[in-house]
Length: 78
Image 1 (tube, rainbow, N blue to C red):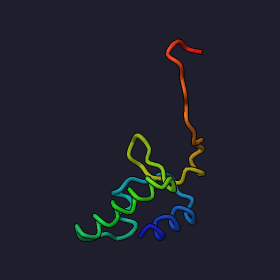
Image 2: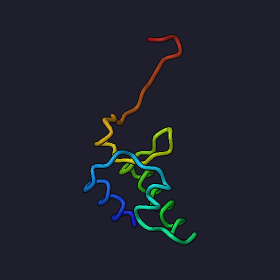
Image 3: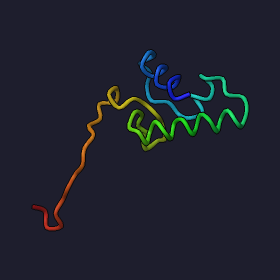
């Protein structure tokens, strides 16, 4: 399922999608299939291949103009 999801995002060049939009695209009909979809999305997010936005939409990081990194700050501002 992970490969199908990545392939769809790479080929379609679509905007970030919600779980329910992906459910319709992949014609998910049963609760078991939905669990597999959600598990695949979580695994892709954990591996960094997909990004979940604040509005719970999934997309490819390279197509969302995102920069991956770590911010370090000091309490006193320097």
